[in-house]
Length: 448
Ligand code: PA5
Image (tube, rainbow, N blue to C red):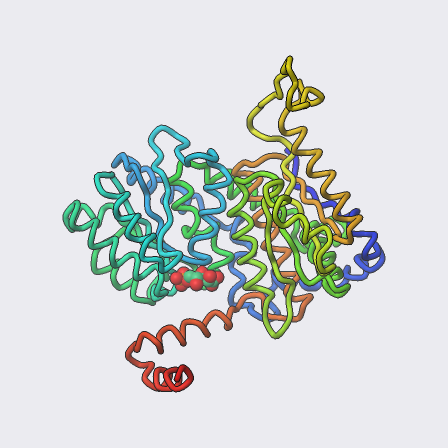
């Protein structure tokens, strides 16, 4: 079995191998600290040993719940959640699905997400779409009190109860939330929904391998065992027993921190396969929420190439030299399309005849990396043997482990997100939520 591989040779013109190697002691120390739970945020390290500690019983419970729901021949499964309670499942399902639909297996429903925004149009159009369809709902919220998913669920719950009656609606709703706290736990208990617990010590952005991600992924027809196996193998490959030189998560953490010190403040996650668009969104949350604090942190951004070479390519090639790229490079694609010969050759593309489209894509990838390096943009290369459950599992754990080590290198607590509360406080004050009277008064003054 191949593994995902890290290559940062094209960053070495900007930083030296010696400077990367100088991170060895701290990288090994921080990796060990993640396992021994000795540093900041140590009450949120449940993800570190998660892949190797998931029980067979738990996997069977998730699979059986998905089977039970799928037996209802759903057209659509609506997954309600935001942030860490949304992006992991969306990333994996999109990566594994056809570009044009996520119908994979004959009886798998189309998985649609809600509660990840407060757009009235989005919700209205979703309700229209659900009319006349067979559907079920998975509502995911660790706190059980997040406004966006709670609001969407309130609307969707009413609709599903009107359509199927309260009892059958209850059979079509699964709740994923805290073991005992929060409004969603109380609601689920009262309504008798099937529930899954989000462990206390796993934060939202690290929770894709808990029921937060697994339920939706299993319902979409994908193999959660392979996903977990991939993560488990990467857990072993990045464990504290593995020395820095062989630990790709520690090396990635070191390289990006060294680039950051060198003035490269923005990391762009690049893909050449649009199925990975949401994987990048997941990655952005992971790194943005973990590192962007105390006035510090690399700004994580992403592009889909070659599409974005025709929009953002100019800036990346010649704009401010504060960027570096991390390329997710897929070695083997799933399908074959060969460029046909054309006798008239009016488009002058016969020089490509007989080549696979992926060969062209790979040359675009190599040509771009070389051009961007020449233009002053260091390039980190992460090769993924193929897009499959197994390798997505490897990739997820690789980035999670690297994020923990990297955050400690930056000397922040990578496992909190205090900054996320600021907008909520203002929103509640503006909406005159009970308990926010003082804030309402202040914000109204400010707006005068
Ligand atoms: O990573 C995080 O902690 C956040 O993105 C949360 O996952 C997000 O705010 C949703 O929270 P909850 O699951 O409590 O509704």
